Length: 401
Image (cartoon, rainbow, N blue to C red; front, top):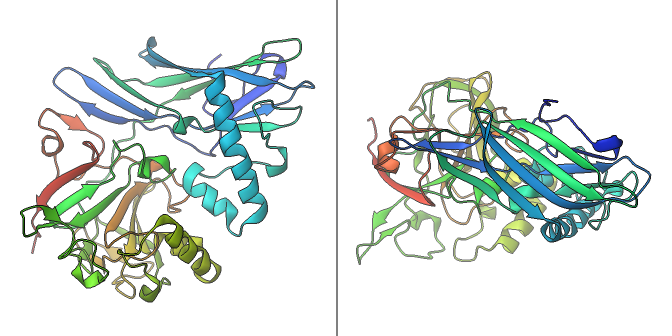
């Protein structure tokens, strides 16, 4: 039976499996060489629900990848790894949902929009009757396949064991290959470092809507010839950073659908003193007055370019906004100045493309810039659907002025 990505299938109705995030689209990063195609997939997180009258324990997850109906790759997650994922993640999620202000928003930034009953989450790999368990599959492995054809669908099978049976559940997941409907250009110009891009599995790609996000900074050579983001490495003065208050331009024609300018620059954590713990403390304090979105993303702008294509510009300098909600903007128009507000370790622009305006719950979309062709990212690439390379990319993009 062919099913959609949210269909739940189980043997005897015992264990059901679905995607954890509502409206989740599994979108690969795709790059084409001369005769080969790279399909790089962030595997989706799963929600298991035990609807039987006996306790069940997942014993393995098998991921089968197909291309034009033929199986081309398979991955396997062992019982031991499933146990570790459930024990590490489920208690943390339940604790967050039960005790923190803005808990759903905090979790949405990682997992997307979830419908999870905190009280029914199992603490262990043994899932009791009526209980559920989250398998944070994207934290375990990614699927990176090189072949003459791209992967076009996944099937995920979960095996369980119980008192008297060994039920299985399966999920068919068609992959989404939506290309950009609009032509986009890089929203900063100059001598740039584009970092933490999609081939880096440990940064933006670990977060739901940020999967294809990027950090863009201006760099210049320092005294010994190395490219640096600052006049003096580790400076505590924002003015010393080349990206600070640099013009941010619209990546394409569009309409302004959201503007947030409540993050005071006086609360910006000094780059010299920044740490994840310090940043989290400041965000938690400000979230009580300006909301978690403005506190975490800093001052930001969201533009709509098509029915399901929105761009997000984050960490902007306070009171630098040059547009208001409802304005129409043209590609290349200055909309704000770069800053270091929100969860930012130094002045930079965070940019991402999304399929809705909510930068926490939207699906992140791959994005290519027409001023950075594939050959600029990798001399062997003929085509790509996302700005990608390794961890970072260095390009020079002159201003149109």
